[in-house]
Structures are given as structure tokens and as C-alpha cells.
Amino acid sequence: MSEDRDKPPVLLLRGVGLVRNGRTILSGVSLWLMPGEVVAVVGPNGAGKTSLLRVAAGLTPPSEGEVWVEGVAWRPAGGGQGHARGQVSLLAHEDMLYLDLSPWENLVFHGRLYGLEKGQAEFRAEELLDELGLLLVADLPVRLLSRGMQRRVALARLFLRPASLLLLDEPEASLDPEGVAWLVERLGKRRRPGEQAVLLTAARPGQILSVVHRTVRLEAGRVVAEPGAAGSE
Image (cartoon, rainbow, N blue to C red):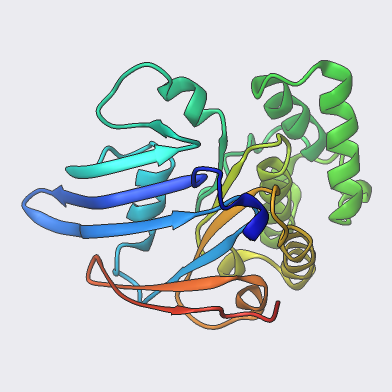
């Protein structure tokens, strides 16, 4: 990552805390991602991994601390927040798909929502559906697809726009084998300076950890260890 040493982190969390209904969800969490870096936050269920991603995505405001994306502070609220959010794509547990629309229609709709021109959105939709082995079901309503296929469509939505930061919440837990294989290959290609930074979560070891640069362990809302490289360079 030496080529990007002079660039600001794509994501910087500094002393982030989150309290909900008197319960501490996150406490003093600090971490950073440089361009092209793939980092996994690991830990047991209930450790605060999903809440951490929601804070990083700008969906949940932290109770304390700072969140910076591409050098722009998200808190306190101020100018530039909208621009920063446009640099982030999130794959949450929910697919965020319209079940009565086809995979093709969903992707083109979201592409247009992300600001892509119609032709560009259609091109990216076909390209991603092809890569993910979904062309044969591209015109079927999403509700008729298997759960694994639906998750692959959601994965395609994640990669529609050239966001500088990708957030994936336990992606391996709900993807089918085809989706996992594609994601591992795709993330492996992004292990270079200047590429998108990726922050993902995992509750247990899996294939996805083979492509990460670093792992950060979260327990009871606190960072307890940062073992370092988890995959081969």
C-alpha cells in the first residue's frame, strides 16, 4: 500500500461509541481503511459488527467519536456529508430489492438512482448479471428466485457504482457457493492501491477471509485485537 501512503484513509473511525436505550453497543472503536485495502471485522454474534457498519455507512449516527470518509467528516453534520455518502455502497442483511421487478429491472432502477446514465446502467446490469450467472433468470420476478440467487442480485447492486468504500455485512452467511466464489475472486482483484476499500464482517472463518489484508476483532462493542494480515499477499 506504499503508493497511497500520502492519501487520507478512505474510512477513518476515531473513538466511536454508540449507546441505544441505555445499552452500550460500541465503545471507543477506532479503525481505518486505506485505498485498495480489504479489512474484516470478526467477532461473535452480538459483538456490534452490524452496528459498526451502519455507523460507517452513515445510517446510524454515533453517540460519540468521529467518522470520516474520503477526508470528509460525517459528524458533526455539515457540508460535504451528502458527497461522502455517495462514495459508500452497503450490502446489509436486507437485499433492498423490489420483489415484483426482475433482476434486470432492479439493477437498472438502482443504477439510475445512483446517477448512472440509462445506457450505462443497462450495460452494467447486463455485465454483472452475466458475471454472477444470472442472465437466464434476468427477466423473472425476483420473488421467484432462490434465496441464493436473490442474494447474488443484491451483490450485483453493490457493485453497480464506483463507490470508494464497500461495506459488506457477513456476506458469506447468506450467499450461495456461486456467489461466494465470485465475491472472493472479485475482492481478490481489488487488493491493489487505488482500488476500492472494503470493510466486511464475519462471525466465523470462511473463504472470504482469504482475501483480506487485516482482521480486527470486536467483542462486546470494543476492538480487542488487530491480528494483522489474514490472507496471503
